[in-house]
Length: 135
Image (spheres, rainbow, N blue to C red):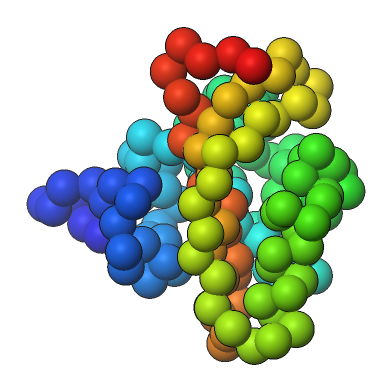
């Protein structure tokens, strides 16, 4: 991903590799939220869109446990469980699903994309807020 090419879309098939290679500034250009976390489930990447829309400052989020401190509403079999299953089976994960965010906000309809691959240090939750949609 560089400044001379178009920004990748939420649906792009090779998005995980582009996210891994992107700088923080490039992640900030994306039109959807990006939460990257490491093998200890600690947030290590968090873009400006997600920070602004979730109202969590980047510097406060980095290092937090993604499913306990940042987003306990994702600590369930649909999200956290899928990452655990993929990791346990040493399988790639690329799943898109509708979801309703409820933590510290009015219920908000989103599309989420879960991305992980064996051998990659960072896993991602992408959040595409549906314009004007409320639960």
